[in-house]
Image (cartoon, rainbow, N blue to C red):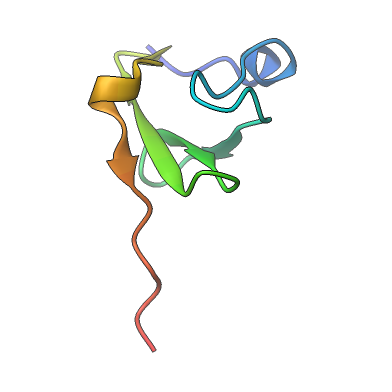
Length: 60
């Protein structure tokens, strides 16, 4: 099941309520304000603070 990008209009980071960005390659939603990523499992975003992971810095 694919993630429906229309959900981005209504979902927000559960920690800070900021907009989330979709990372199609990694199948996750990213909160740049908190530097957290939330997984998308079977097309459903898992927006639980305890399931969030820290956003990794890109390699230089």
